[in-house]
Length: 339
Image 1 (tube, helix red, strand yellow):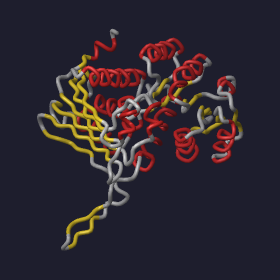
Image 2 (tube, one colour):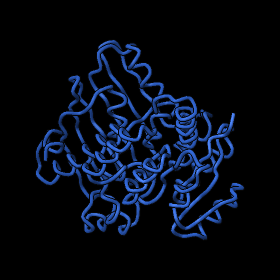
Image 3 (cartoon, one colour):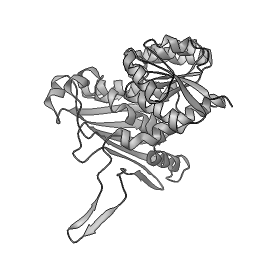
Image 4 (cartoon, one colour):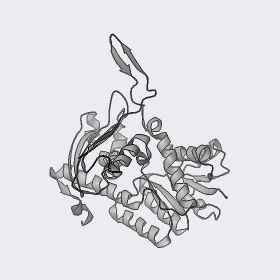
């Protein structure tokens, strides 16, 4: 079988992650071209993984008849436009989150996917994590009974720069967007209402830039379940990533991964490894699995595992949380969708 030919737009950190996954872990596909507005970066990444073609213009990927699929790994403001152009050029698309910061642009992207019949997968890699995925399986299989409570903790090891915070779209869109998607994934249900609280407790400069670095959001799901997400931009002990689903028949919880499972027990106490440092260490296997499933969906004409609805609703929830924080009240999702 001919290998799926992939073009990568964006030679930054996430472009590197996906290039590595395809090159070393997915024999059914290969990277055919890498582009970046910084052509030197595209060239460097291409040479790292033995890719023969690179360019500063992503249109070179779209115009290449040999390329079957495009991975959109460029800065957020370019995601939707590149995804739309790629699908209109006949390419299947894997698009990093968020698809866009506007609901209108995400909906247009969905319309183009529908019109062209191209595959469109959104990059919520945490769904493919071995811990989170197993908790979701148990919930979906009914082992926990009726789902009643969802709890998600997500805390970064260190805060971003105030400059990054000012340009990132804010904690709810930049960081908690993963947790919004995870909450709906675990609950098997969309959210109907959001109530957010937030503060700048880690770095006052983040607050001065108009953002928060510590946040709690409560969720009401369409299936009646309740949820709570807590985020912090700083955890002194490492990258804290835990989920819990509680139901009428029981509870399932996914804990942190350390570098080893070794525990040292002495008279002084019991000690184990800290959580792995950050997302590249913690979630690398999930990046490989999400890409493998995208390749399989294209090669075997299957549905993608994470579609545009997830991309839309995660941004809707982020906007609802920001509105809730600003107005100090619960916000119904319908207020955002109908605005």
